[in-house]
Image (cartoon, each protein chain N blue to C red):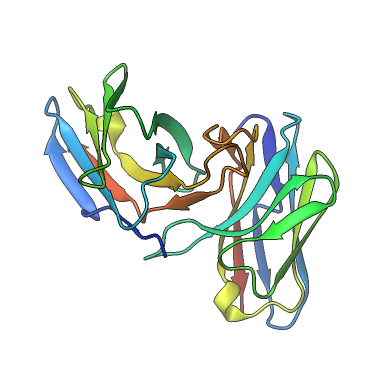
Length: 115
Length: 114
């Protein structure tokens, strides 16, 4: 069965630095890979989606890369701020051709940005 | 959390009692999902719905049933709650096209089964 791993449970960085989070998966490449942010006591919030045939996607200070050869996605937050502190979830969408859009979620990486 | 609500937000119940959680959306999205989130696990899909009266099982469906009689409401029922079902439950909605992100997650329901 498909497995997804976010290889750091926690990541601590200094304000202003770039945070890099890793998401690895086994077996089949997903049709899409998505990143979410989750704050304590709240539901996840969608951040970025990258398709199988895309290498990189950007949104403001966020950047996602997708390497199907390495079976890996990297999520970068540049010029990090304390407000970026949260848990970040990686999710795989295995359905091609239009379907339910079910997602397989990683356990998440808790990012702490220190002033 | 705009457009999707969950009720109740918190519930404490006893083993063996039935429990129903409600998800309500105002976005008219076709797909609705129930996930549970536990320490040490990612979000895991319980059941989902792809239309009124159309539902299917997810990864951890044992002990749960769902119903969707209207587009806007998706109910999750624990027929006889067990302590292993203590968890935080999230409802989510999606526009449905593969790759469309789960645009909205609800605020979650924290369920404790004693």
